[in-house]
Length: 201
Image (cartoon, rainbow, N blue to C red; front, side):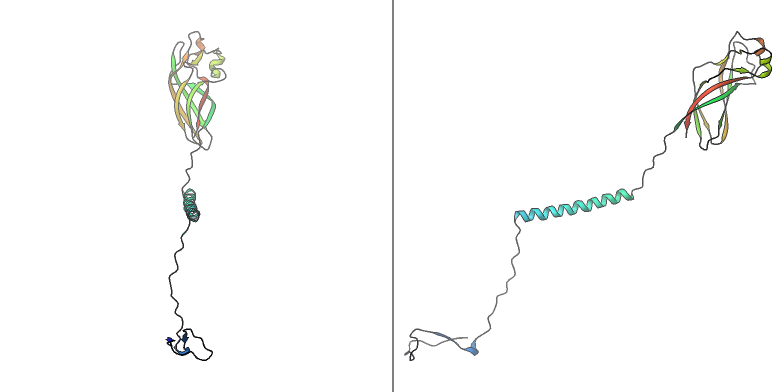
């Protein structure tokens, strides 16, 4: 509490002639401090740019982590192995139920032995290396040049042969016997060399 003595009276000896304010000890109060909320800090343009870049980096980092997780957990697509081309030399013969005569055509019977552990598919056949030969009995009788061949350069086929099995197939009217053959060739069994192409599945 502030107490004022009116200063218009006579001055005290040796005292100050000016007015004075006297603070009485017991009347003093503790100072009161005004409590104010601190002002919110405002960021300048550079600070806002730095904070924005940091936030963007965090978003990209999280997106990258999610992408990596998807890449790891996504079931892998296992591609099937490509077919392997095969080239085989086979032996075929004429159909014994048909008597092949000079100028005639006959069926070709083909046997394919697959001793592999995977199935194969024959896609074409053609004449192979070597000559067509008659069976020993007719050959000894004079059928040394039977004049028998397949009548197309290539026959397209689709023969499936399972693993470790033997497949038998017929190609109708695939054989032709020329006119200029000895009579000893009539009724013979002819072995025909073939080359077969296909795929291993």
